[in-house]
Length: 134
Picture 1 (cartoon, one colour):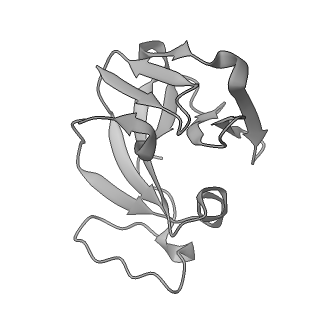
Picture 2 (spheres, rainbow, N blue to C red):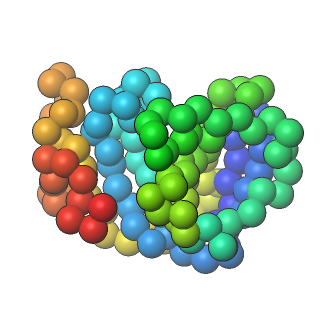
């Protein structure tokens, strides 16, 4: 079981399953939305995800035609991304997970548009655009 919450803990979620993938996205949208060098995501099956509390605090921001960011309107924590192109999946922000979680092998995507001031210093696979699966 994966449990997570926003920074103010008004929104809480659970996942009755495991992460299906684990990635660091360096695209300009993720950098802007996270205010960081990259965003770290964990893929979960939509059917295994549920909100435990705080649904009234949820807001969405559609940052592309098919993809929306879900965040807490009280503290601003970005919780997950949902995409009409992948209706069976959600991508939770790894920083909102409370406690330990098993991560599948990770990778970096959209490194072709990474922040020029950031150097990737690990040995994970890197893709100029999305991963071969995405």
